[in-house]
Image (cartoon, rainbow, N blue to C red; front, side, top):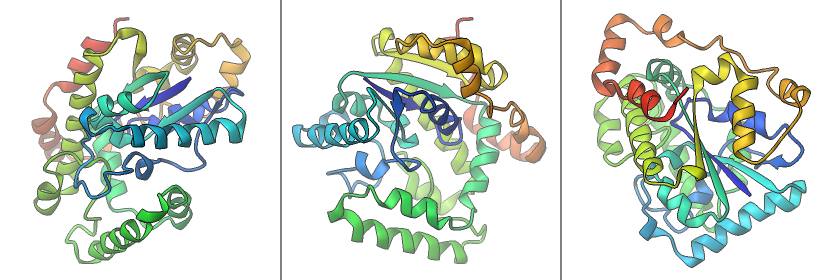
Length: 286
């Protein structure tokens, strides 16, 4: 089995993945994300919006081998994957990955945007970068290395001292990145990501996915994790579940409302509208 976690950037995808892989039968790649692997054969596409028609036998075989690498290396049945850009291309992922189940996690956009804005302006984390670089297809290394250097250099000349790109690239991203603030782009990234994911999941067999609200998860991690594990076909004891969520905290709930100004919150809400409430009403039934 393969478990694909889908969520907009800064929505708790890391937390959820790291919680799941604490169990013996789950494992993932020894890096944060594998977007370079998902972009195999589509390196030159400007955005991250891949369609089912982009899938091919060659790409499917490539992805299968990469998942099997994790399965064999860690001797597990269940490979857990989370790449935030996949929120824009769930149908493409579903074409490539056999025997996949999906966990869709979404979070209050105000908290997401305040967190994402920090990432846009963050300093270089060399270890983080090198860990991800290990999984770049060999032939694509020069391409991505040069793009990365240019992105870092442009940060010094940007008026906000931010990167020229970060996070999932929706269609029209490059134009927005040159004209809008990190706050505004982050809000659009959240909206485009959850809209695309919502559309895909509403057209998918309900037996293939489960949705979770980030706030619900961090408030009641044992209850929420148990639901996810049951969905994935695992019946683990209370102690195992309790141990796996020891580091889960609800301290970040509402952080965006404290760190952003009233004007910034108003600006974000003008972009995202009531989509967060719509997601809760659509996917969370209890």
